[in-house]
Structures are given as C-alpha cells and as structure tokens.
Amino acid sequence: MQKLKLKSTIGLVVLATVLSSGVEHVSAQPAIVAKFDPSSEMSISGIVTHVDWKNPRAHVFVNVTDGNAVTNWAVELESPVLLRGNGWGESSVKPGDRVEVKGLRARNGSRQIWSESMVLAGKPVFTLKDLKPAIPARSEPAPRGTDGKVILGSASGYWGFPSEHALVEDGVNVQMDRYGQLAEIADAAKVAPLQPWALALYTQRQQRSLQDDPMFINCKPPGGPRQYQSDLGIKFVEDKVNQRMFILMGSGNRNYRIVYMDGRDKVGSVTGDDDNPLYYGRSLGKWEGDTLVVVTTGFNEDFWMTNGGLPHTSKLELTERFTRPDMNTLQYQVAITDTGAYTRPWNASWSMQWVADQEVPIFFCQDNRP
Amino acid sequence: MKSKIMKIGLFAAAFGLSLSANAQEGHPMKGSWIGEWKGNQKLGDFVLLVLDWDGSKVTGVINPGTDNLNITEATLNPDDWSVHIEAGGYELDGKIEKLELPARSVVGTWKGPEGATGALEIVRQ
Image (cartoon, rainbow over all chains, first blue to last red; front, side, top):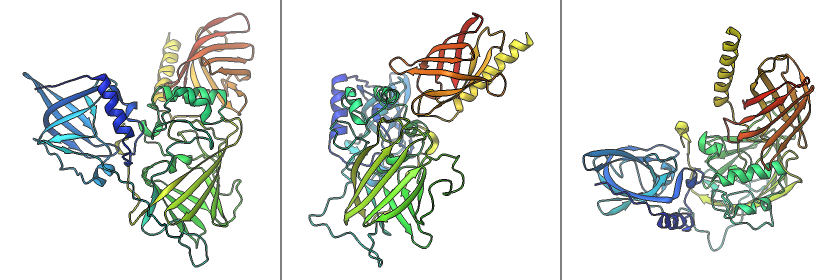
C-alpha cells in the first residue's frame, strides 16, 4: 500500500535535526537541500528491487504498490564511504526486502527521496554515527624528523574534520551550515570583501541553495581552500629527495597537488605551461620555522573555491600557512588576494584534526551524477 | 534562403556546443559569446563577442578575425544583471536571462551606426 505523506512542518524539523544533530559525519556532497525539498517530507513502504552502491551517493530502489499500480522510487542515501564507515554495506538490504522509508522528496517532482534512515523488519538500517575521533585529553607534541622539522604527514593517518566548512573572513561572525549555506542570506556581504558583481553572484548561488555547485553537478575538483573543508580530509606526503610536498585529497576524486620546495622561481618555471590554468594552481613552498608556507597562483575559474560558492577569478593568489602545534592539530591559515573578485586582500583560518591509523578515505564522484 | 538555413544551422550548432562547454564560474561576462544580432545587414546576423574582466572593467572585441570591432565600453549591472556594450558605433543592451551555467544567455537589442536596430541574443560558450 502506498503511503505518501507530505508534512511540510515536520519535514523542516526532520531536516533541521539531521543537519544540526551534531553528528560529525563524513559528508562528501554539497547541500541536500539543493536537490531535495525540506518542506516535502514523505514516507513510502515497499519492496527493494535494486541497490546501487556507488559514489557519490548510494541508492536503494523500491517498488511501491498502490492498488493495482506499482511505481519504482529511488531512495538516495549518503555516500558508500560514509555508510561503510558506519558499518553498512551493499548487502545491508537486498532485493526482495520490505522497507519503510521516510525522507524528503526531490524538488523536481521525480520519484526520488533523500533519506538518512530506513527501517527493515522493524530495525533501522543505514543510520549514522559520529565518526569524528575524540581529541585526547593530553596531546603529544608534533612529530619531528631527523632534521628537526615538523612532520605534517605520516604513513598512517590523515587530516580531516575541519573546524570550519566554508570560507569566512577572520573576525566575521555569520551563521552557516556545513555546506556553506548562510542562515541569513542578508549576511552575504559580511562574509568577505566582495566586489559588487561577486557579491551578487554569491548571493544568487546562496538563494538557489547551492544547487549550481560544479562539484555537485559536474564532479569538479575542490580547488583552492575548499580542499581543506571536507571531512574526507587530506594527507601530506613529503618527498625530500626531489624537494616536493604532495597533498593527497580524499574528497576530489583522489586528486593530488604538488608543492615545489626546491626554491624555483614562481613565474613561468613550475611546469612551463603557465597559460594552462589549473584547479589547484601552481604551488611553491618553503619552511618558515615550523610553518609550511605555500604560495599558489595559476588557478582556472571552473570551480568554486569554497563550500557556499564565493567566486574567484584567475587573478587569485593564495598564501597558505600550515602549522602543526601538536600531534592532533593542523592549523590552516590562508591569505586571499584576488583583484578580480575582492576589494582587498583578506584572511581566513581554521584547524583540522588528526585521524590516526587510517588512510585518507577514497572517494570518487563517479558517474557524474548528482 | 540557403544562406539563412546555414546561419540557423551555425547558430544551432554553436548553441549545442555551448551546452557542453566548460563552466566559467568567475565574472559572469568573461568568455566567448555567440549568437545573433538579427537584421544586421552590414555585418550579417551572426555575432561573436570575446569578453574579459580585468578586475575593474570588461574589455573585448566583437567578431574577432572577421569584422573586428574593439569594445570601447562594457558594463554589467549586478543589481539586475543588465549589460551594455559599445563598439564601432554599435550599442548592445540586454540582460543576462539565465545566470546559471551552461546555458547563460544575454537577450536584448542592438543599435547600429546608421540607425539600424534589431534583436540581440547571445549564448556563453
């Protein structure tokens, strides 16, 4: 029996609960509300026909019977990376199982539901738990190599769970969710010193609930500071022989970035193809005491440099400072100069947490599907 | 007749290409725009604009390589996304109809040096 219930008020409460529950789960994709309408909660009951266990999000297809009519619904869940981290797998529900699902209906009216929970034989499946590791009461000092320099990475472990998920100028207090969606769009002008066109574009992206995010709709890489805004994290691998630092990303289809540490000049010398702007730009790094300082230029304009959609241009220059004050903390500071989009240079900073004894998660935005 | 069909075909092909073109998430006017300034008997209906943003103003050229017209004035009003372009005695006025990529377009009118006028529709590549 088909059971469709639209409950706008309850839907909002459910979504607010999900998004603010404090569950620091590894969310690989932008706002759920970009695709699903929080004012349209519904529930279905039916028989599982297929489980599509693929990134960026898993889907369970359910046949719902109403009288003589049978319709197939796609129930969208979080990414397999996250679900697997919570102990769920491709066979947690199987074709033929009867399931009860509650969720939010797709904005375009298609038979798609977003759900973070599902009930099978009276028991919830695909529930989420807090994956963020506990911070030790007493943190060990940062590890150092034989040359006395701080080691930012190690064989087993990665940096994840950033304290901020979107760029906001240091000292500015605005409320936004983990996807960079402002609680009050009127606060847009406070976020950064935007030029008028950039403010209008940022506001428009916010008003559209970030649904035009190229990382969401086209699997574009999380270039610029965005690579440090994903719970899926990053990992440093230093190649001292060749004087390069590699930064591996868990969020951007396992992209990597090279920071040249050999003292070469910035202009025209990185790879000799400076007319080919890149998602991660071209980076030169050096140590200043215990801080790795990386200057990057040569960005293209094909991506959003932060969750939430702050614009940038090819004039973007980043000066990033990475400091590991103790074993479990990575402090990230970025100075942003972009005379094409901002009225002045500005700064943002946050920290990331060490996830010990784990490899950086493998996430591919495969199939190019939202 | 044959010429008109060819122009329509060219526009359709260009429009199709634009749908698969790379996104450009920076300044909304930057990039290549193709389309028609309809009824332009001097230069033909097909038009190509190549625009750039230098951080303070929009620069560029109309019909590069064929009937080059250097743009002397180009503005974007972010309050309503209206566009104004001047080049070689021509004035183009319009509005970004759909800001979202990949189907960003400007729809409006054009005025020529001898009082000619017509509809303008260009799509970002």
